Image (cartoon, rainbow, N blue to C red; front, side):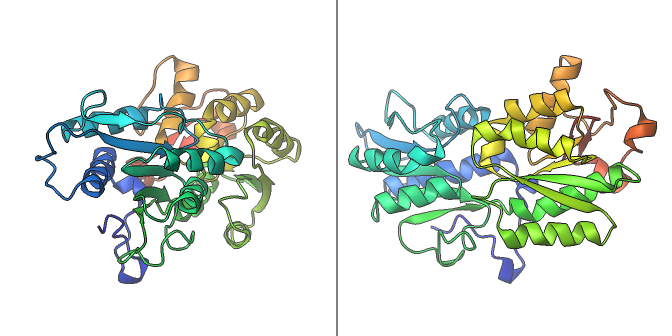
Length: 319
C-alpha cells in the first residue's frame, strides 16, 4: 500500500488544504478495506464481519468521523451489518492513549486508525502486526515510517504537512494587521519542535515582528496560556497545528472571543465556528468581516492572492 505518496524529496507535496476531504476519507476507507482483505472492495466475503478500532483524541461525533463512516458505507462496509467498530477509542486523553491502544489490540481488530503522531506511536507500541492507518504532520519526520514511498512494517497513512502552513498563516496574519509588532504562537510541545518554533521566530524577526511562544500540553492549559498571551501584549495569535487545539476548539474560540484577540487557525472549521458565534450562522465564503473592532484598528483586507482560501474576522483568521 502506498497511500502517503507525498514525497518531499520528489517534489510531490500535497498540502492538506488542497486535498478534498472526501478524497482523504476515500483514501483511508480504501485502506481499511484493502488491509482487511485481499479481495476487491466490491467482493467482501459473504457473512464476514470486519472489525476496526480507533485511537483518537477526537470524539466520535466529530464531523470528520461522520463523513468517514458515510464513505465506508459507500464502499460497502456498514456498521451493524458487516462492520464492527470496537468501542473505547474515541475522545482519549493523550496520557491514556497507550492504555487504550493496548486494550484495542487485545480485541483483535482487522485494522487500527490512529489520528495524530502521539496516537500512532501508542498504536505502534501495542502491535507490530495489525495494520495501522495513520495521519500525522509528516509521517517520516515524526518517525512513524522510514520512507513515504516504502513505509514498511504495519503502518501507512497520510502526511498533512500542516506545520509548513504554520509559517504561511503567520505571514498572513502579519499582512492582515498593518503595523503589528508582537504576535503570539499557541504551541503544543508534543507536535511543534524547538527548531520549528525558532524558524517561526526568525521569520517574524525578518519582518520586525516579535514572536512569543506559549506552550500548552493539556486542554486545561489552553485558556490560561491565551490569557498570558493577552497580558504579554500580543496583537494577534497564531494557533499552531495540533489535534489538541482542534479537538478542544470550543475552549480556544471562547477564550479568543472573550479576550477580543485576533487569531488564525489551522482548519477552516474553527473560523466557521467562530463566525457562527457572532452571526448565528457559519460562512464558507472568503469574505472579510470585522466584528468587535473597526477596519481602521484591525487592518486592511488581505491581498487578493489569499482570498480564495481564507477567512478573516477580528477574532479569527483561517486558511
